[in-house]
Length: 76
Image 1 (tube, one colour):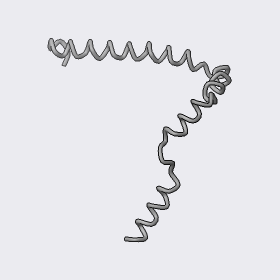
Image 2 (spheres, one colour):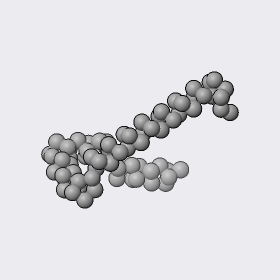
Image 3 (cartoon, one colour):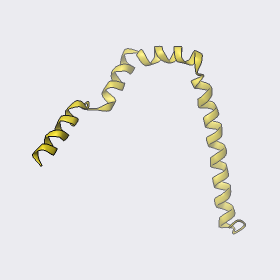
Image 4 (cartoon, helix red, strand yellow):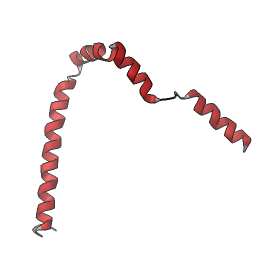
């Protein structure tokens, strides 16, 4: 049992205290904003976000429509 506890403690010691600390450090230094500009030349992230928003809106409308039809018992 002590061997398992020791192994788990060793694995947990390798993990950071908070996964968001690294993200906060990168955001504060501006590294993410700088690299996002370079990545956006090859992968149009802002376009993907717009397309995803449109797709998500269509799916939401479809599910609301299905709920209303089921409530009215028009669709089984």
